[in-house]
Image (cartoon, rainbow, N blue to C red; front, side, top):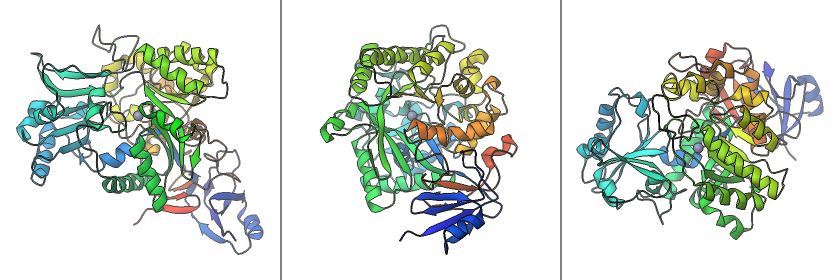
Length: 537
Ligand SMILES: [Zn+2]
């Protein structure tokens, strides 16, 4: 017999329009909602968990983050702005780490935020060579699309002045044309991303499976503490699937994960006879991931107008038009969902050309392809997306996280059509909330604050025309994120038959001062009715 537990709180935000006083949970799902008295009578003897003056909302669902990358990142030196504020501090941290790194071993740092360092310049190969010429050193920029390596790492990667960059990648050079150790896109993927490399293995060795299980545990704990119960991992390879499957087998996987398989590994699907949309317990294969352009934070996205302050820098296309056509066509024709990273308006336009052509040739109206990030839009893009039924997964917290720098990079006109939550909603385009962690902060409540206030961490207002209401912002991370992973029937709402994934908050996100949403406390997080995290003290 399944045990039933009744949960009551000051307010329960169900996202259905109903405001019940209590929820009854049996097994992993919600059995009923209603008044406490009603549910007590119906489920005689059920335990009652009273959240007191807490407020229950559906568990947060991040439509685009990088769990597998985080599992690895958590094992490297933390060079985020929470940990360092200057290149000198980065050097000091690396030096301290050097003291207990075996001879020849790699020194790795992650989440380096070049735009916020005190020196106002970018880390280079020469800085890292001063720390060591014997140990290879690799520092990943927070957006994950570029990184900096020292001379030893270049040597191990077989890169010298005469080497040509891999397709879709670029080597940085200094004023005199020498390699400065900065590696862009495919060039850094070949060093650090087993999910996406063209090489038999990455230049920097991947962490051992047991280390990654430990990193995965750390990442999930951090996400639960922020109220997260589901996420889409937007770049998965075979090793990551093995990592998550092993966690599920051990019973330690406490997040529901929608996986986007990197196109590089598309052959796996045919091999295993599976399609996007298939699920195994808490894991599900949501789509096939590919890329058209670079990043917003990395200033490499492909745009119609050049970057602010330049006349000829339109960003980078990382997949040729012909390759993009072939990928979209192949995945679409097989009946699988394609989820394409496209940030800039020119990149999105090129992608829409291919999605429209694929739908025209082989109509599959039920196949809703996703545009990952979809950062810079215009009216034509919005109309075309609506007609296609395409789904947008824009950054939820970039306004807060990048602040006034965005104006320097993109300018005041363009910022009004970036992370365009208001425009997507007004045009009837499905739009889900996402962090792209580790590129942006993972906390969904901070994203709610960012979407509602459109104010940077530094107080700069950025694109106020794109503001949305707290309730619309909450929907991005609950109902809409569930729609974006094709799970709107089981997730995102607290209603009978839905998964009992929910969060207890200190206060009501729909009525608190929106500028305080990011600091709203999370008391406890439940997955399938079981407590997976609780605040202590
Ligand atoms: Zn991403």
